Image (cartoon, rainbow, N blue to C red; front, side, top):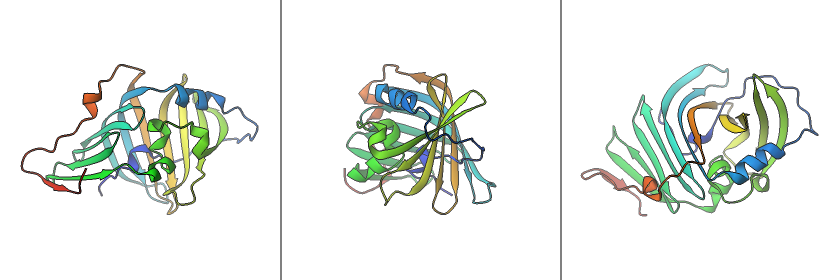
Length: 207
């Protein structure tokens, strides 16, 4: 099962939280509004509708607002997903194939916009603070876009920094991504988000 560009920002919510509708969501809004760059290693797990793990992946990520990101899946299948702010390049190393497509307005209604978009997070999502569990402050986000590919996203902040993301789609499948070795606000050159297809690989689409 291959990972897609949407899956990079997904998680599975399995914890039980005491929801408080009047809880303060400002820490999440402040964090995402102030975010300029983010880099980390990650471990991603995809679950079925019964919360059984289907696939585990590891890799690293770099983000730079607005619109730039580089997700590198290392195991089990090497795959690069890179955006220079105008185009998204997906390089499947096993298939020796690159797919390129422009970033569209639809990206504003996906989890991708949570970290890379230029708009405030509360412009595209309804947010509820769920309180803390295991020293992680949890927030539930529901997209304001009825055409969204997911139902709910959960973001977890540890010491004020994003450490976990969780998402469940309309089919009950869920993905969890845990970040480690986090660098928040580091200087990342734009050249890190430039992609040049390797010589000899098939390229599908036009930048």
